[in-house]
Length: 247
Ligand SMILES: [Zn+2]
Image (cartoon, rainbow, N blue to C red):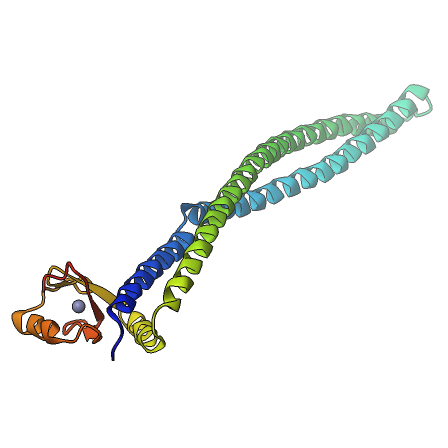
C-alpha cells in the first residue's frame, strides 16, 4: 500500500484524536458521580422501606389505641351502672349486694389493666412516630444529596459531550485528508490492537508496542520508498516515519 508521507502524518493526527475520543468515553463512564448516585439510591430505597414500616406501626398502634380506649369506656360505663344500682338502694338482698360489689371491684381491676394497656400502646405509638419523623428527615437529606449529585453528574456529562463533539469534528476533518484504503487499514488495525492502529516511528522505536526496531528492520524501513506504507514487524501497526524517526 502507498500513501503520500503527508497523508501518513495526517493519519497520526487521526490516531491522536481517536485516543482523545476513547479517553472522553472512558471519563464519561467512570465519573465518580455514577457510583455516588448508585450508593445514594440504594440508601434511599432502604430508608423508604424503613419509613413505610414505621408508618405502618404508627397506624397499627393508632387503631389498637382506639380499640383499647373503647374497651376502657365499656368497662367504665358498666361500673357506673353498677354503682348507680348500688346507690339507688333498690338492691336489697345481701347476696345480690355482695355480687354487685364484687363485680364493681373486678371492673375496677379490669379498668386498671386496660388503662395500663392504653399507656403501653401510646408509648409504642410515640416511639413509632418519632422514628417515622427521624426517617422522613433523613430521607429528605438523602434525596437532596442525590439531586445534587445528579446535577453535578449532568453538568460533567454535558462538558464531556461538548468536548467530544469538538474532537469528533476535528477527527472528521483530519480523516478527510487520509486516503480511503489507508484509513480502512487503520480502522481494522485499531480494532485489533486496542485502539491504536497507527504509530509514530520515534528514535527507532515503534510508539505502538514501544519496541526498538532491530538493524534488519531499520534497514528495511530505510530502503522503503517514502510513500510506502510501512508496518511494525512486531505489532503489525502502521509505522509512520517522521524527521525524528532516527533513520
Ligand atoms: Zn510496534
